Length: 231
Image 1 (tube, rainbow, N blue to C red):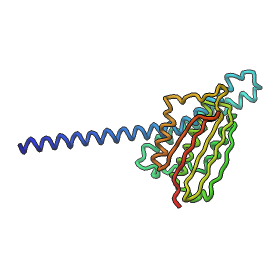
Image 2: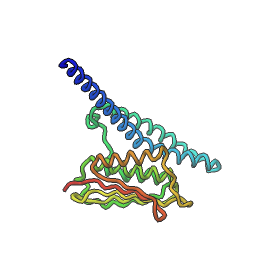
Image 3: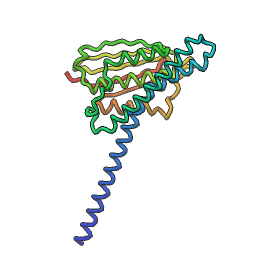
Image 4: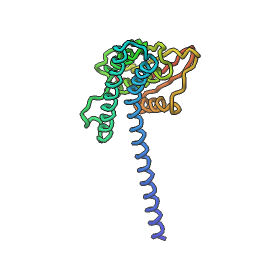
C-alpha cells in the first residue's frame, strides 16, 4: 500500500510539472505573438498605405512616385530592423538586459507624425501633467494603445479623421482616448483575425493594472484606456 501511494504521488507530481511547463510555454507564445503584432502591424499598415498610392495613382508625377517608392523601401528596411530587435528582445530573460530603448509616452508624437506622413488626418492633444513622473511601464503601455488604435483606424476607416487625447496626472491615472469617424457606410470593419490585436491589447492593459474599452457608436469608433499612475 505504501509503495502504491508513493507511485501515485510521483505520478501526480509529474502530471503537475507537465501542466506547469505547458502553461509556461503558452504564456511565452502569447507574449511573443503580442510583441510581434505590436511592433509590425503598425509599420506594415503604413507600408500598405504607401503601396496603395503607387497602385492607384500610376499617373502621378514621377517625383511623387519615386518619393512613395522610397518610403516603401525605407519602411521595409525599418520593419526588418524592428523585427530583429523584437527577436533579440524575446531571447533575453529580461527586457532591461537587452539594453535597447523601449517606447515611452514621449514617442507618441512620432507615431502621429508617421500616420500624418502616410496621409492620415490625426489630431493629438497632450494633457498630461508631470509626465516625467510617469512609471515607464505605463508609458510603454500607453504607446502601444495609441499604436494599435492608429493601426486599426488606418486599416478600417482610412482617410477618416482621428483624434488622440492623452491626459492624466499622478494619483488620477493616465487616460488614452482615441476616436475615429466610421466609414461612409456607417461601419467599422472587424479587425482581421477576429480582433486579435484588440484582444492582445486588452490583455496588455489588464496586466498593467488598467482597463480598456472600445465601441462603435454615434458615428465613431472609440477606444479608451485607463492606466494606474500612483501619487
